Image 1 (tube, helix red, strand yellow):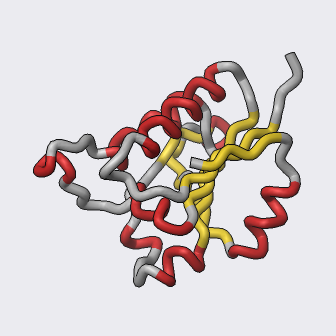
Image 2 (cartoon, one colour):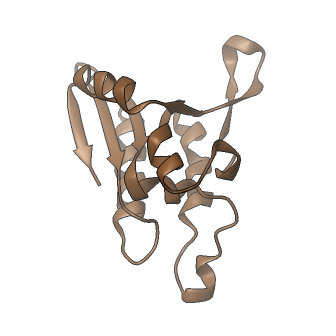
Length: 134
């Protein structure tokens, strides 16, 4: 089976529906089958990565904590659109700290989230084999 470059685009808020969890489930399944998986968080999707979420108070699951599993599946391409953060009054400091072990760097933890401009993200989208919107 040929490896496909698959980009999952997360646009939805993390709570009030199951879209965020479904997206993560599909990403992990794709990665388990050795596909070249990437995630992009744009628009309200950037809220999925916010620190300090407490959705348990309203009976929801904390999706941000679940993203820690990405490293276990070798998902290293996680992009957050800079303009989406800025439009919501957020910065990189507001995001969870996703880290993974980097075998090329003696297993030191390295950050997985990459901030990217809207323009560069559009070019990245054009280089994918498949795009999925959530």
